[in-house]
Image (cartoon, rainbow, N blue to C red; front, side):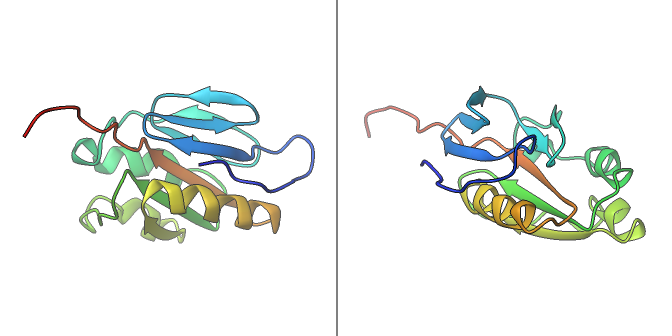
Length: 130
């Protein structure tokens, strides 16, 4: 889905998302990633089931107000033990499917908030015969 939102130059704006791809500033990414207004970085977990506490510890060291966690095609909440580092760093956490996370990140980023989106890819549909 394409997103239509204009932002200031030099900020990372999510332009589109689809199964297996997220487009930021006209560059397509095909791995899980962390997006802030100033940077885009690979994020190790490939799926929701791969999430570990260390993945949130990576984010807890950033100067953020809130992290938007995109959990793929559907909304799933990680166990609180995994996100403890964010609580200890006093960083808010919002959990949503990756499409909603992309849209919410753009809005918060355009409002000047110190936000990061931790995005797991939307899963590609499996082709098969039932």
